[in-house]
Structure formats: structure tokens, C-alpha cells
Image (cartoon, rainbow, N blue to C red; front, side):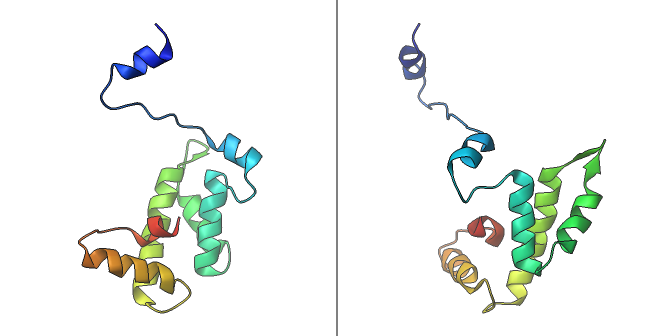
Length: 113
């Protein structure tokens, strides 16, 4: 069976996921998972200390749990933007409130990414 026949038998087609290695190699503005979260934290707080504090709390068996780090950073990001409506991230808040008016509840953090 060739790949076309295999895929055509499904109503929902599979999605090919390519890891960060491809984007890191070919795109100038791409990040590793760690690098992206660190960048967002730096943009939010102005230094890397907040990110390093979160990262230190999320180490399991000598490995970092980047899903947990992202969850904690997302909460802080959303809280900070909610308290500073017209600050540095005004455009993110504008889009957030526009979407909320349409009943689309989006995370400010995910909008930013």
C-alpha cells in the first residue's frame, strides 16, 4: 500500500509534526522550548530571574518539565497583562478583549506566542 492510499482511507487526515530542529536550522527567529519560555519571561519581567525561579521548581529526576514551566509562566503572563491593560502588551490585550466580546476565551499567553 502506498502512502496516498493509506491516508485516503481516513476522514480526518493525520498531521505531520516536525520538531524544533528543522525550524532552528532554517528559520532565524525560532527557539527551543527552553529558549522560547525564557524569551517570554524576559519580555514580561525584564530579566531572567523569574524564569530561573520557575525552572528551579520544575525539575523532576534531573530533567526540566517544560509543560509545567509553561503553565506557571502562562499564569503569570495572563495575570500581569490583566493588571496592566494599556502597558507594553496593549496589542495582546486589545485582541484578547476583542475575542472575548465574541465569546472566544483565549489565553493572552497563547495569543502572544
